[in-house]
Length: 71
Image (tube, rainbow, N blue to C red; front, side, top):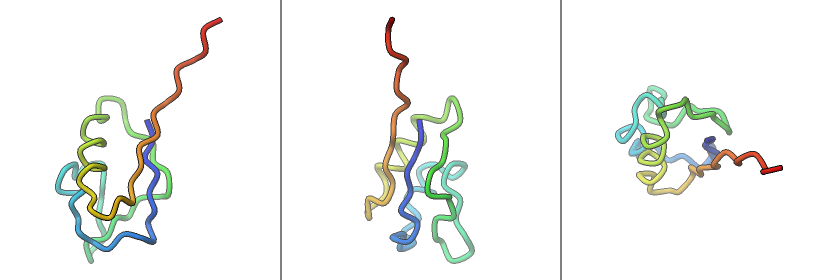
């Protein structure tokens, strides 16, 4: 799972951080400091979903890993 981040659209509500502080670090002004694409560590998928849902600006998007094609 990956999260796409529109960092330039962050307005500092910090709701993602409140929902999942280890996945959504903030700078000293309360803005998201993530790169444009982050890989979610194994076991943190539900926390990532909570953080994405919490963003009132909808600047976070989940991209699920594609399952390998069956032969």
